[in-house]
Length: 141
Image (tube, rainbow, N blue to C red; front, side, top):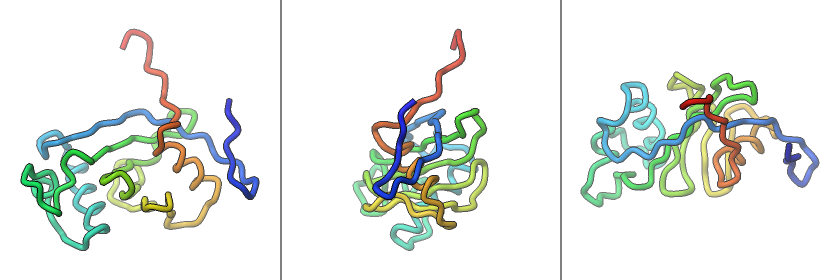
């Protein structure tokens, strides 16, 4: 297992990505995901728009269509912990799994948590990046 840490020697927690989706239509989202999307992008541009507006195929500044990625992130044991919504490559929000409670945000400098925790911040930075550890799918799936 790779030892992941930052310059201060803080050892990151192990997190795994259990799901990645890149929806382009509001119909691809659950009711909860629609609300999470509304909250996530509202934090970016302060506009309270629904999922249809956020995924509109109209090249508007309000739309995140084509850049939205949703990742489900779990502890190493597979317990779901976070729903991550990222868009435009360097912006987004983190929710406690299955809720609209924001646990943190994603910006150009990485993850910022609502409650500071360096080990968790490092682990989430990794889980949201190209080196994310993906959960192994069950046999036969």
